[in-house]
Length: 243
Image (tube, rainbow, N blue to C red; front, side):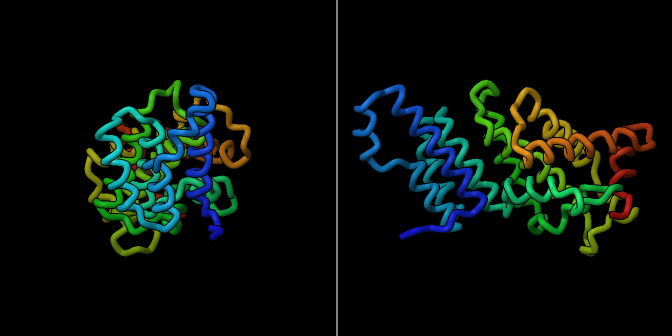
């Protein structure tokens, strides 16, 4: 049966192809014997293609208990947590690369419409996806993992802003911004900086990756240029701008 690949499953296929190629080149023909055995990464990928993120999480969590440093499992598990939250890194990157879809004054609230409903659970899931990818050493991180990490950091920041939008109008009022805690503000500032930094030294020859990287850097610079004695004040000033 043919499956139509979603944006998320395209990344997962790249993960599997990359790691299968690595296994073959390092182990030679005998590696095919190991591939005859059912591979947790394959089962998890199929689960994600079927939109069963929880099943993928269960499969890979169990697999990692026996092989805690398996980077392939970690990479796909990060995708599983993001999918459970409703975040697709490719969709987010494509929207960020479409400058006409973003506002000049406040690009964060412009992303609210493509984000899932913001809850503590969805934020926790995206934070978990970030934590997993960060656990992969930078030198070992694949290009697609770098993109995912940057997008998940951006998504985590955006969701922290969106959860403040209690009336759902896509604009953060002064009253809504008063509910932002210092802890949340620090997390948001740290996340956008980390998202920008994720691309440092990475090949962004892809037009989408390059445009997304530029937009993240633009957001970071715009926040820094806002008036305010503290980073928190600058962030609130930036988010208060109407899209």
